[in-house]
Amino acid sequence: MMSRFSLRLASLKSGLFWRTFFLLGALTTLSMTAWVGMISVVQHEPQVQQISSQVISVVTITHAALTHSAPELRRELLFDLVANEGIRVFALEDDDKVEPPPANALMPDIEKLVRAKLGPDTRFSSKVNGTPGFWVSFKIDDDAYWLMLERERIRGLTGIQWLGWASVVSVVSLIGAAFISSLINLPLRRLTQATRAFAQGRRPAPLPEKGPAEIMEANRSFNQMVVQLQQVESDRAVILAGISHDLRTPLARMQLEVEMADLSKEAREGMQSDIGQMDDIIGQFLDYAKPTEASSFTSIDLSALLEETAHEAERLPDVRICTEITADAHAMGNATDLKRVINNLIENARRYGKTPGSDVTEIDIRCSFKGSHAARRILIEVQDHGTGVPDEQIEQLLKPFTRLDTARGQANGAGLGLAIVERVIQRHGAELQVRNREGGGLQIQISMKAV
Image (cartoon, rainbow, N blue to C red; front, side, top):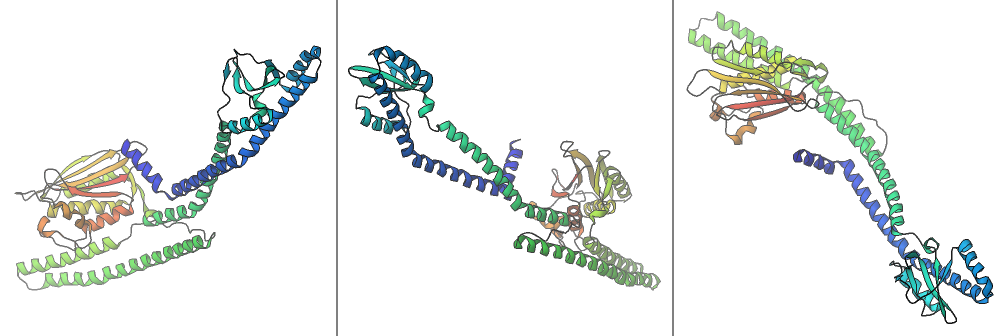
């Protein structure tokens, strides 16, 4: 589970879309942080002046109103201040439970300006006797009073409000970053999909030759490359067909002349063997160079194909086949090419995988399913019981014209058997693994997507 999560995380980090998205997101976040900091610094002094002026004005007007009003009318005046202005005036007692003023960046400067106007004895509080508000003290003659303002009247944007607005702007910015990243990566995604399709043997639809000059030039070059490579592929098929005809015709004539010539039995068999080997080499070259068209792929019953191929191989006198094939294993592919692959693997095992101390080659052919239903794959295994090859030389087996004679015995042919297998497997979008089998021998595994 962790490995799968790590792979997904690695793909997210390596994807160009996500890199662009994260870079734009980081740039937006840094810009937003700088903007909030700048606004906080710029607004600090004006906000302090505004709140201080408001507090001083309210206290001064209330002080003047209470001082100049008739004693019998003060109660009505206090009711009017509460009802119309949200201002409450209470007598300041020595036993009042007073809590300190709000702890924010503005309060120290507000206290300094208000005390400069109202006097150094002015007190501030955020709650008096359990009643929250913005409390300021003032005196009328020798009597002290509390004046309480509603917090909303002197409150600017709080930290939560700043965070809320910053979050809204950040979300909008990230959505914009995702949209911009998508626009930037759309042409590259199209090019990647077209390249993958072409690598799998399909002819991709021409890429649109529009947009920025760089994208337009890349798409035009890719379209031209596809046309030129397909022309090369077509020309190669014609050339190979000619080579096959021109070489095999004299070989057939040589075979006929050998049959009619007055030769000893040993000489005739030797020449016939050489001619047969030359014909096999020509066939290997043609199989290696022959393209596998994805357009010819159909749903294939691999179980039946493997059973048929194994039955045919059992007719060979020096081969013993052991099968373990799951039924109803279907995959998309070319039946002829896949059968050629299995035959090549069996022939490779027959030639080079003989069991030590025996003239019979034991070959195991297995077919099974792997993975969940949605991502189910078919595993095909062909393995022998021979001596295997050194681990450091396994990769050499898949290279064209390579034979590991010292490890696998003497070989006839051009050394294209496993190279043909790998080429066909890649055309089918499958995976090929070659490794030594536990207990001796070589194991070749093919993994294909099930349908």
